[in-house]
Length: 185
Ligand code: HEC
Image (tube, rainbow, N blue to C red; front, top):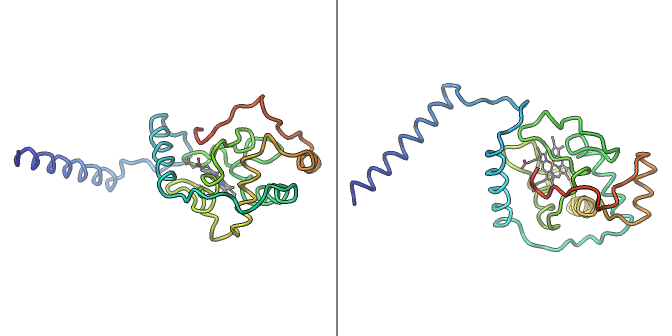
């Protein structure tokens, strides 16, 4: 039994050293201008979900989804997020194919995660990806306004839809016809 455990430990150490060696010798690619393999994406997304489930406080939003707050959410989104996640003109984002992993288009494929999950993702960012932590830049109420907008993209109240139309000359999604991406991209 002792020999068996010793064998396992040695195998793990050899694998770790081989992995580290391969990385230090330059065998691990660092380019971001390519799409991740499906398996890598699935494992990473499952790990992200599990980590959020464990770490994120399961709180309710203190900011009510009023017309005013939702419109504020659109404005903050357009200024800070559209570059990566797509604008309300519903075009592909500027950086859609320039990050590894690629940023999901949150306008074309609205999230169907709970508010606490979206708020946590915004405020703490996603490590090893291009997703910044916004808690150093945006106030908590602003991040809740973003959350309110992002979780209601295809069911916005009429006044907010009017604002969307006026500021982008494109109709907002009204639900039904488009698939939700959740956090699977
Ligand atoms: C520089 C590019 C970039 C900017 C700017 C950016 N994001 Fe992201 N965001 C990403 C990337 C890349 C991911 C995908 C991370 C992954 O694959 O897990 C992501 C993921 C997310 C997710 C999903 C996390 C999950 O659970 O799947 C949310 C929500 C999000 N971003 C919201 C925002 C908001 C809101 C803003 C603006 C305040 C913003 N992002 C700005 C790159 C960006």
